[in-house]
Image 1 (cartoon, rainbow, N blue to C red):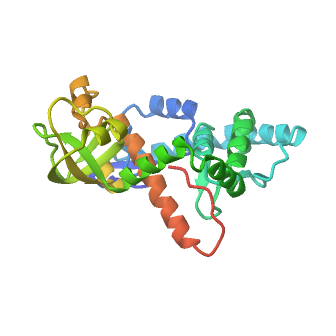
Image 2: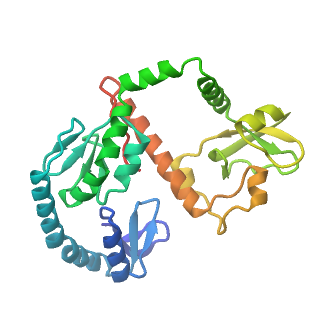
Length: 298
């Protein structure tokens, strides 16, 4: 619990609890002045008595209700367990799989699921057992597809096909960290902007004319007129948190131009991706001598 809003130095407190849609709705009803802080990944409630009010609410809301729900979920799991090498039952349910975007997306949708960086596993309380059970076939199938041996077989099967050549060309182009922009509508530098390939920070306009064939193949049309190459780098999570969002979705003209100011929803999605990449990199660096573990939850 934090007693002040660090950004604005206003009295208040921070409320953090595992995500569940119904719990968030009840929280918003109890604290209508609360606002979400992306930088803290928690709710900020203004007021000098906010900390005491949050503690009372959490005590009422979470104690008995969640304990009862966990007991029901534990009984349901014992009656109809899942036998899988990716699932372990302890004081809660723990999932370890090879990294898969599908697995991450499925587990994000399970209420109360969270990534434990110490255990390097997803943890799901028993109260969310029914949600996890419904999604488990998709989770296990994606995990098996991403086992190293299965991935190697698919790579061998694709080798030399037109699809693999296109994928290699796209990856090579991506590594060049360049993007075509209209010569008469250059983007501002050193600002978080959106493109068709995601969020970028343009660092330089080279002035080199972009080849039309390369643009069409890898980027789609970029407005009328001449396009030139702009160098870019990916923004950090901290830069995405500080970025100022647009109040309106991008227009068709801005999409044709190839860059625009991101909306809040776009920034939130990019922040999740950046945080996931940064934590995954930290995990790989910390465990360079051990087996690869799944990516943590954004």
